[in-house]
Image 1 (cartoon, rainbow, N blue to C red):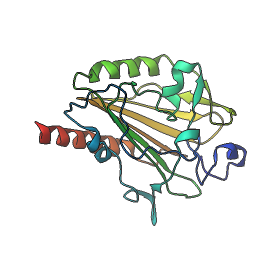
Image 2 (cartoon, rainbow, N blue to C red):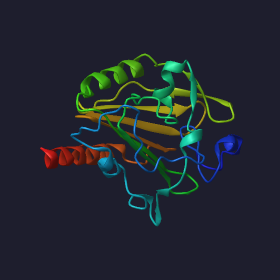
Image 3 (cartoon, rainbow, N blue to C red):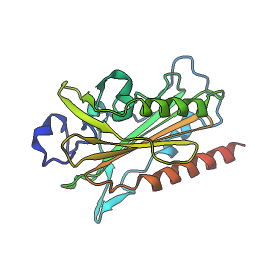
Image 4 (cartoon, helix red, strand yellow):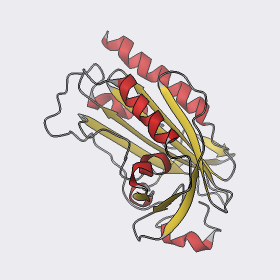
Length: 230
């Protein structure tokens, strides 16, 4: 959330806050899961192509979003625990643990009304059930349609209100959240196709980061990678 909301300074490690705030962890090099088979069709080395390049997106003229470490304070816990992935990005709670690789990037523009983009992509063995995974995400979102208590690194609690699932392509689950009592919203999109998951979260006071354009671009990139390996 923007820096002017001083009472949420517990989340401000650098210049940002978000759905839950920011501090200093962004996954860089691909990370392998123990025992995961790297058998494609999309490989861990290609996951960085499923992230938005730093400095390539601007919401405010002259202020492109730049890479900034935000992972570890982005709501690392929730009550009820099963709603963590619905309201938080921290520790990637929605990702199945048998990934063969993972890449993440978090960005913000440092503006007064800050705009933030939080992304993670992960690859899985070739027998990954992409549609089945997305069904579990949809069921989880639908089961968390109530205020959720969430916290960052220091345990300070905030209340997050998830919205119902929005209309989306079959390979995508989309929804939004807002912080109780604040003009701060985050839009979530989870894309699951073939053996990859790509999660995109955009946060701002007014939905000003166009998540739909990012979803379309990400789906097109996944299809491109699949076509190149066909």
